[in-house]
Amino acid sequence: MTVGEMLRMMRDPLGAPFFPPALQVLLVVTWVFHIFFVTVALGTSVLALYAYTLRKGDPFWLGVGRLSARLTPNALGLGIVTGIAPLLFVQTIYDPLWYAANTLSGFWSVSFIFVVMGGYSLAYVFYLKGSKDGRLIFTAALSLVLLFFAGWVMHVLHSVSIRPEHWLRWYMPDGTIDTRGVTFHAYNIPRLVFLLPLQSALSLAVVVMFAGWYLRKRGDDVAFLDRLAELGRKLALVVSPIYGATGLVWALTEGVEFGVVALIAVPVVVLGAVLTAYFAMLKQPAAKAPLSLVLWLVSLLVVAVVREGIRVASMARFGYSIAEYPYRIDWGSILVFGVTTVVGVMVILYLILVLYQANASKEGQVSARVERLGRIATGMLGAWFGFFFLLGAYSYFVLR
Image (cartoon, one colour):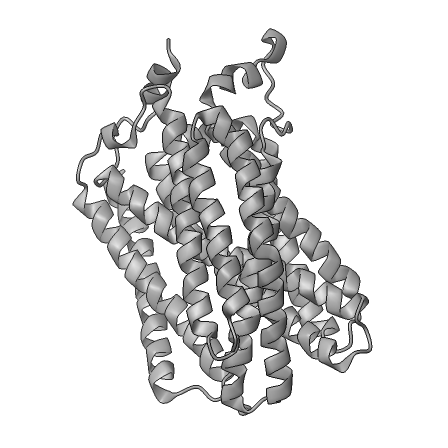
């Protein structure tokens, strides 16, 4: 049996519930928001540690540390929520890859949720109990370690998933089945550095600049905000060329392995050059912060396309293509997915608007329209929970 035949046999026999390439596009787009919030959380966590340890006693850095400590759990919460969507699409159209990788690294894939829970809880503890003066700084440090380790686990799972030619050897080393799932079978350090530490630094830089623009709305110290935004610009200016160079190393390692050197090298090197030029010419980082944020999200979209291109190229080596994944339009699944998406977007939109408006004034006021949106979103969520409960009860008591 060839690897391509194996992959086709491992697909869901019912097929996908919708046109697979459309789900592939949604996978790429939703990953952008997920990786943005995740890297913001990692970046603010590092900045808080730096402010409370190496710059302790400086009033400016105390303000930076408090802001960072507050942003970390918020960004991480959004990163977790927005991570559900790309995971759903991966499980739907890349099920042979995803479930094989989770089987081969089963211990770590199961541990992942507990690692994230620990990292989030510690970040929240530090924000509530230690951000005022830097007490309990060890909780922030441990949170960062756990969150980065969670990123490492996801990196390994993805790396394992796009190397199906090694699955059998990894499952039966020396002819003996290994069901422990504790081995990190595949990874690429340049890719990891590019996607996590460097993108975290750039996401941090953009968010810091955005804070310098946004916090003016509530009358915060303009001098502090200008210095904060300039700090973000300088960080981005230093990291951007390193970002492009590391992407080139990624292309010369993993790109060579899958025969996609140009696919990786050209976009990421151009990204590094464009970002470097942009931040070098940026004169008013606070005033131009919304533009900087848009530019960075577009950059992440480019990276998402490159990342997906590598997966497609890897599967193409075995004659396997998502375009050939069988599908049958399942209107029931589509309806459930569509309504769930609407409810989820309403709830997330409400949370984002509350965060935005509450911090845009010293009084922490939220407009009546947003409060009304919150009541509607909460009602929709309750109704949706009720629907699933009734559907489960009907299935259990009537259809069994």
